[in-house]
Amino acid sequence: MARIAYDERAAVAFAATRHLDEGGIARWQAAVGRHLRPRPDLRLLDLGAGTGTWSVAFRDWYGAQVVAVEPSAAMRTRAVCPGLVAGRAEALPFAAASLDAAWLSTVIHHLPDLPAVAAGLRRVLRPGAPVLVRSVFAGRSDGISLFRWFPEAARVLDSYPSVTQVRAAFAAAGFPTASLERVSQVSAASLAEAAAGLRREAHSPLLLLDDDAFARGLDRLRRAAVRTPDAPVVDRMDLLVLR
Ligand SMILES: C[S@@+](CC[C@H](N)C(=O)[O-])C[C@H]1O[C@@H](n2cnc3c(N)ncnc32)[C@H](O)[C@@H]1O
Image (cartoon, rainbow, N blue to C red; front, side, top):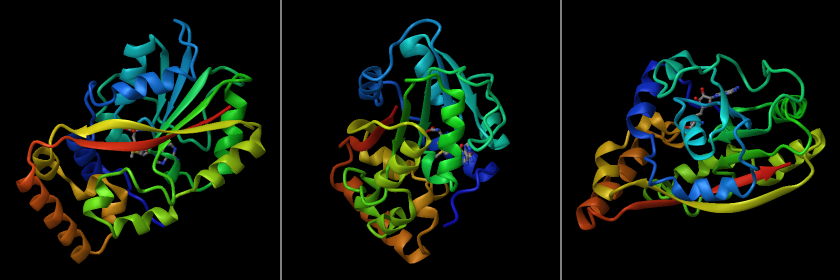
């Protein structure tokens, strides 16, 4: 199924509405920290880095040396940090066994050839280095507020890779073990902010809805925002670790 093409329009919407603030992602620091051994020379790959917000977090949290790869020029142009490299997950421009960890945040559903990506990561990561996948997987829409307002969008998730498929592709490439946990984040400080700031073109599942379903969902969200404007929007996303 087609995904967002990260062109100018999508990149503007992403940069405007999908940057999470430091407090909102505090639990990710603890969750990821359980799988890394932070040290000053840790070299971490931020794959499909988008506008680089996680690259900044990894530098701030762990003092990591981050190498960020992002194919979309429109996203790279809006990066919040310098140094994003043009490239794709299917052809990683790094030497063998030169990296200590890989981070893929809401990217896995953009990668149709998972076996090729897993094989490429196996080549560039050192033995024992983790692949950390932050995502919503097929069949696991509960915990994500977007699907409460736009329930029809959960069907779009059926076309995303499942945990089982990702685990199988990575196991075949030599990443045999995995852990899976849900991590909470504050996606918006308030429902009022979420309703005012929602941009359809920043979310693949919303882009793939028909217009009537999108209008119904927006109405649900706006009515909820009138009822409880100050309620924070808390989502629980998956962290899948392959090693
Ligand atoms: C939803 S954005 C996530 C950006 C960032 N990881 C974050 O969480 O803020 C998905 C990103 O994956 C990138 N992407 C799409 N196809 C890719 C590929 N084949 N290899 C690497 N990145 C890809 C897109 O350009 C886009 O920036």
